[in-house]
Image (tube, one colour):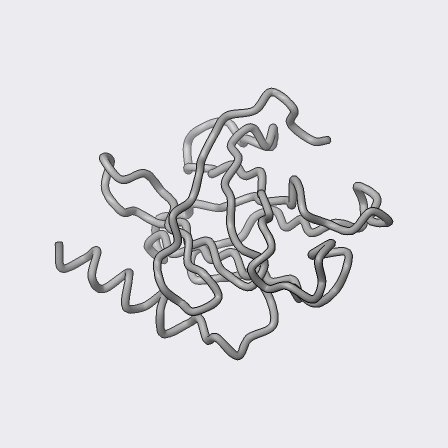
Amino acid sequence: MHILLFHFSMVLSLISPGIKAYCIYNHFPQDSGIQVNVRQHSGYGPGAAQTERFMKENINPGEKACCPWDVVNCNANSYDRNAHLTFAYDINYPGQAVQRGFHQLISCPAGGAVSFGDYGSLRGPARVFGPDSHPFPFKEEYTDAGWQ
């Protein structure tokens, strides 16, 4: 319980309502070697080709990757930090085959954040926060779409 509260307070301290970007955080333990791969699946601007939309591979523990929510390639509704976005992600655990199929989807508001970490087996590896830094109810699903 104390570890969960620590992670929660750490995430809140890293997210500020004044930040004009969504961020993906890797909050797995520093010495775990666990990396996160993420790319935007929906909510990007109509002119954003696959190569122009947000994507970051090998986010190491303690690192983050961000994209401004007021830029159309990151958010088609660049005026709305509450716009609904989805991200496809994979988590690479040391000793396992590297995953880059992007088969897990998670939703997040454009001005929010997704935090991946060791939150306990019953809770899953992700937490989502809204633009106000409060926990955000999110949806996770599996897709066969992969890189589309």
